[in-house]
Every structure is written in C-alpha cells, then in structure tokens.
Image 1 (cartoon, helix red, strand yellow):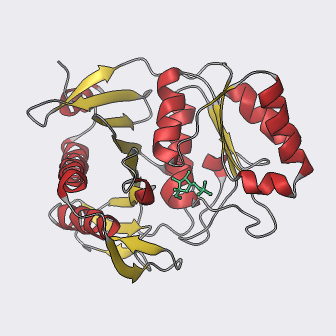
Image 2: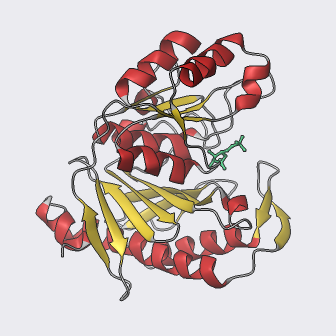
Length: 302
Ligand code: F6P
C-alpha cells in the first residue's frame, strides 16, 4: 500500500514539496466531502469570465485558498475563479506557486456526473510569462464513484484512490498512453462551420472509434490516461477563435500529465507545454491524447 507521501519520497521530493503535496491532498479530501454534502443550487454570482458560479465552485475555491494560506512555502496562487493572481507570502521560502481550477465541469454536479480539480505547481513569483513545461508537478482529482488523484512529478504518472479511511493509496503505477480508437470531440459546434473539423470527426466515425465524451475535461482526459488510448479535441471557431479552455488552469497541467504518460498535446501548431502564458485567462485550442491522434489533428486542423 503505497501512499502519495511514500511515492513522492521515493521520487526524491524534498520536505517542502511534500508539505505542498499534503496541502493539495487535504484540499481534495475536503472538496470531495463538500461535493457529496453541499447544496448544488446557484449562488447567483458570476466569475470574471461572466460564467455563473455554482455554490460548489465558490466553496471549492475557498477550501483551496484556506489550505494554501496555511502553507508557508506557497507564495502565490491563481484560480480560474479569481480575477487576478494572489500573493500569499513574501517569505524567503515561499517559492511555490499553485494555479488551479477548483471544480472543472462544475455544472455536471447537478446531473451527478464526474467532475474534477486541477492543480499546476510552479516555482515562480508570477504566472505571467511561464510555460507549462516549467511546472514541477501536476495533481488532478477526479470526483466520481471513487475519488482519485492522478499526479506527476515528471517521473511518469501514477493514480491513487481514496480508501475508507480517507487515505490515498496507489492504484495504478503504470499509466501509459499508446494508440487506440477512442475519441472525445469537444466543441462540435465548430464542425458546423469548419469543414476540416467535420471531416476529422467523420474520419473517426467511419473508422469505428468509440465515443467517450462526458463534458468534463478532467474525467475525459482521466479516461484517456487510464484506458491508455484516445484523443480529446477542443478547437476554436468564429465565436471563440481560441476555443474555451484556459492554458494556465486547464490545458498546461493536463498537457504535462498526458506527455508524461507518453502522449502529446498541441494547439494545432505548438506543443501546449511550450506556449507562454501571456495573461491568466488566456485560452487555447487543444488536441491532447495519443501521439498519432494529436499528429492527425495537427495535420487536419492547423
Ligand atoms: O472548461 C470547463 C469545461 O466544462 C471542460 O471541463 C469541458 O471539457 C468543457 O468545458 C466542455 O465544453 P462544452 O460545454 O463546450 O462542451
């Protein structure tokens, strides 16, 4: 029974890194509990992108802020739900910077589908100017029938499952993405005006790919990681030329996980991990999953 701490120690993560991981895991446990018990009614407020925030978005964001504030090594946070990055400490050792999407796909909670939290971990004083490949680690949580954590410290990708005592124990030590016919075609609205996207989707259909799309990026990419195959696409179109998904909070962390599992992630031209974050709410098209499929998307849609 290997815990997250045991695993990170075996990777050579130092004490500071271990406490940061502990902070994120504590937040995940609290959010998992909040999802099971809190009201899913509308809170009646809007985030900076004009999207209505569900009560759960706000609660999850609050939980993460509270936990990060307790950790002297975390100097900076940025959240999809906050208007700007937030300095927590100027302390000498406060090198860690955590960006997060507290509850990705939160509207799916109402219909009892899986949702998730995404954390990207940097050592940085601001997020402006960073690239995804500077992340020192990524941790995502999936709240489904089980609560699981998938993480990387750039030594491969591992999955941990929460047991009855609230402890996360390793459940998959060999997460690898190879080739296989599974697709998660996001933003199909784009196919109404983009012939190239329509043709690509038709190709996947004609080739008898299995459709696996839940409407939540975390569970959809979690599925690609655990089944070890597939592609998730979210292109832009006239209404939203760069699509909807955010580089810092969603795409860069997911790209590090998938790349560490042997897959790839691109915006059609550039590797997602090479894209510079110019502003916190920057969006990007994304094609992410097995290498051959990402290559196919780049050729078809670039
Ligand atoms: O960014 C939030 C999100 O819910 C992702 O988790 C998901 O992949 C995407 O939006 C779904 O977008 P759409 O509603 O356009 O299918």
